[in-house]
Each structure stands twice: as C-alpha cells, then as structure tokens.
Amino acid sequence: MKTRRMTMAQALIQFLKQQHVERDGREHAFFAGMVGIFGHGNVGGIGQALQQNPDFPYILVRNEQAGVHLAAGFAKASNRLRTYACTSSIGPGATNMITGAALATINRLPVLLLPGDIFARRNVAPVLQQLESASTQDIGVNDCFKPVSRYWDRIYRPEQLITALPEAMRVLTSPSDCGAVTLALPQDVQAEAYDYPEELFAKRVWLIRRGEPDRVSLARAVEAIRGAKRPLLIAGGGVLMSEATQALSAFVEKTGIPVAETQAGKGSLAWNHSQELGAMGATGSLAANRLARDADLVIGVGTRYSDFTSASMTAFQNPNVRFVNINTAEFDAYKVGAIPVVADARVALERLTAAVNGYKVGTAYAAEIGDLKARWDAEVERLFHLKRRETGDGGKPAQSEVIGAMCEVAGERGVLVSAAGSHPGDLHKLWRTGAPNDYHMEYGYSCMGYEIPGAMGAKLADPSREVFVFVGDGTYLMMPSEIVTAVQEGIKIIIVLVDNHGFASIGGLSRSLGQGGFGTGYRLRNRESGQLDGEVLNVDFAANARSLGAHAVRAATLEELKRALEEAQSLDRTSVIVVETDVSAGVPGYESWWDVAVAEVSEMESVREARARYEEARQRERRHL
Image (tube, rainbow, N blue to C red):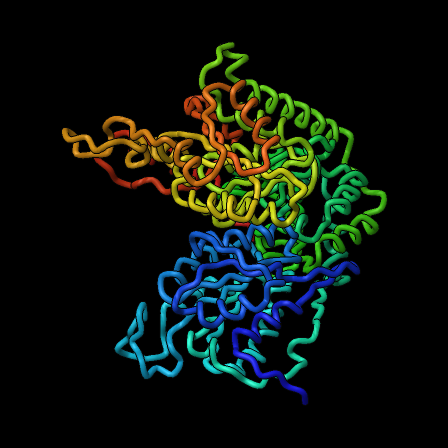
C-alpha cells in the first residue's frame, strides 16, 4: 500500500480538497476553502498546511463566530451543496464558534469546525487558555460543541483522522442529518507526521440522495388530499434546499391548493404566482393566516413547525384539521400527528402530482383564495407607500417604506439578507420574492450579528447577484468588524442600517408585556432615576462604517435612500446606508399571536393587564396529536 508522510493538518487539507458532491448528475467541489483566525492552537498545524496549499483559499475574518456565519450563509445560498471549513485556535477562539455552530445545526446547514485543542500528550499542561478539571483530564472547552454539533470527535492521534473524516463527510452531506460537524484538533497532534494511505487523498464524490416516499404513506397522503375541502400547503426551507420549486408550482397549479411560506421557505413560489398567499404564522400575511385558521388539511413540505410558523400552535383552529408532512427527516415528518411522508421534497411533490390526478379545490374555495390574494397584494402596496399616502411629507420613512424601496431597487436578481430584530417579521410579510434564494433569512436561530458575514457568504456563493443587507443598529454593533473582511476580500455588499436608537423589536415586545420598553433603548444613564432612560445615545454609524473601509452615507428621507441605493449599486465596494425610521408606523400582526410569557404577579398595573390578555390568548393554543 502506497503511503504519504504528512502532518495531520497537511493530510486534513489534502482530504478536504478532494471531496465533491453530486446531485441530479451535477458535481461540485464541496469545500470552497477555509475561514478563521490563527492562534497558538492552530498556526503551526493548520496554518502551515494552508500556506502550502494556495489552491485552497483561506479567508481571514475578524471574529471566529463571524467565520462560521460566513460559511453557513454560503452553504444556505448554495442549497447545502457547498460550504467552507472553519478553523480557530484553542480557548476563546474556539468557544467564539459555538454560537455559529448552534446556528448551523438548527438551520440544518453543513459547516465543518476545526478548533484547536489542548496538548494530547499532556506533559506541558495546563497550557495557555486550557480549562482544567479536578475530576478528569479528558475535558476541555471544545466539549461545549457537543450539544450543538451533529457529529463531534477529538483527534488524539494522527491516524484517527482516517476514520473520523469519512464520518464527518457522511453527516455534512446528509439531507436529513446535516449541521455543524466539530473535529477538535490538539495543537501537538496537528503537527505530528504519519504515513497516510494514498487512498485517503483520492477524489471522492458523495451522492446527495433523493429519498423516495414509501407506497403506503404516499397513498394515505393522497387519500387525505382527495378528501380535503380547504387544503393549505406550507412551504418550508426543504423546498428550496431540494430545489423543488418547479415541482411545487406544478402541484399547486394542478390542484388549486394555496401556498403559505415559512421564513426558510419564502421564495418557494414567486410573489405574483396566483396560488402564493405569502408568509405563514406569527409573522404571516392576512391571506395565509385566514386560510390556515379554517384549513381542514395542512400539507407541510420541508418545515419543522417552529412556533412562528404555527403562531405558537394557534394558527390551525379547524377542529377537524389533519396534517400531511413531507420531510427528509423522520423527526420532523411525524410532528403534529401528521401522516408522515419521509422523502425528498421534489420527489414527493412529483409523486403526489401524478397520484392526485383529477383533484381540484372547489370553485368557492378557489374564489376565496383569489380574493384574499388580491387583498393582500393591495395591503403590501399600501404599506410600501404608507406615510406618503397618509401625510405626503418627506420626513422619516416607515420601515415598510424602506423595505419597499429596497425591493424595488433589488429587482429580480437581488438577494436580501437579514436575521434578527423587527426586520424578519416585516420582511417575511412584505418582501416580494421573484426567484428561489433571493430571500436569505436566518430565522432558525435569529442570531444578531449574522447579517454581514452571512451576506458575504451569499455573495461568494453567487458573485453575479447584488446582495442587500437589512440590519438594525443593535445587531450591527455586534459584528461591524466584518466590513473589514468584505473590503479585504473585495466582497461587495450593500448594507441598509436602520437607526432605531436601540432594540426596536424587543422594545415593542416589552411594551406589549406592560413593561414600557425597559432596558431596550440606547440611552444615557439617568442620575435621577438610576435607569438607562436619559438622553438618546447618539452613535455616528456612517463614520464608523467609513472608518472600516466602506462607502457610507446617511439618508434622511425615502428619496435620499433611493438615491443612495442606486449609487451603491454603481460602486465596486461595500456600502453602508444609514436611515432613521418612524418607529410609530408599524406593520400589523394580521390575526396572529406569539406566546411570550408575562409575569403572573406584578405590582405594575400594565403588566397585570398584559397578563390577562395573555391568558385569554393562550386559550387558543392547541395540541395536534
């Protein structure tokens, strides 16, 4: 058997370079390169290995968490067919990646994490940044990755890489089990040499399988559809990841069944498709929520029924409602007492389209769908021009008007990226998707700070598309440093930063709970009250962004925003546009609700009133068994 003497880190990079995936006859290199930051735990191992492999690009980020976000954004925009590996030193560099690992796993996105680890030989312990335990020497901070990783291993000997790497790839390429994979790499083992078999470095193509539905489950799903009078299909992220949008369109056009979309599934149909009724659930549209309330059959495709999708289990009020779930993950297919169809979304929809031949929703229901669709489209237009219609002035625009302006400028080729705050709710309702993957929302973890690095990942996945970031001041301040990375790598993104003087979303939530927005505004300490309720704390976001290398401007009105967006499109570098909105001009909730607990006892009358409303709303929660 031929062997090649290499360090463990050198062997790792050689292996990653040879991994490919195949789906539907199309083949891709799986890893686009590596992102990270070097420290004493990885510079002499992985750092040296990368230096001698310039064909495996290395991107230096400014925060290890951001590096994982970049990889996750790239994987999401690539429909999980490509990703980046992420490296860090030991200690704080490693634990900085834990939030990114949780995000990737919750969103079912493949990301390989390679944190440095403590010395395997132990004789020099405790090393700098090592966590010591009095009960065992076999523990370190990288054990924290275990609950947020789909696969975890620590490589104590260089030859263990031979068995660990195929297992890592099995998980990373699984349609149902993918997420973060963590291989903890002791810094001394990274630099140790071993005679690795040449076969380890041969090109390997991993087939991304399309699972077929079993005959009995499919027949039961068909029977349920044929018996439904008011069916509704909920399109989740699985529709986009399996590239099932055409199959979905064919199915609903044949049957007349309307479609509502989750955050991850938005873009499954174009906004102007006759069956597309918009967002579902707590951040849903009037049309989708009205139909969900009375639906007698809900067909979930690639959704995990998060509390936002189900409006905390209040969305489906028909006492006889039934569910059919299509999902590659058995875990999700069995939720809400559904008829489980464990299969690839595209394959299952194609099989259903053929099997329900002759089924069509009734004329009365079809007319109701059309009426709600028209009413919703008109409502979006109203919100896109809200203040201009109401006041005619050129003052602070409403957030819905900012979204309308961005949507207009983005057109059919633009990509919208966001993650946290009030933005996901308004964008879920209002953004008009024209094609798959032009709506890039991280709402599985809704992680503040994802937006800028996630947008860089989306841009790297398809450099031909303009990428727009919608971000609030609170989340911007958590990760502005990655603007430097965007400038360094020549990754152009357009960032629209809404200056709300604090956490607008949680501030609104706090007020709805009777707490008056306590601790959510960016204000100076008030010496009289002792609280953070003094004068507004002003931050010059444009100056901050400019100092990091971006083109940055402030837009005081909607007209100035539109001009700034057009200018940003003409530039070849990252731009930041700061705009202050009228926080009093919000977007309605459209008969939806979200369960957030209110204090059961309080000396505050406003809280007691909120608790009474909360207890009344909870009466609508249902168990679907």
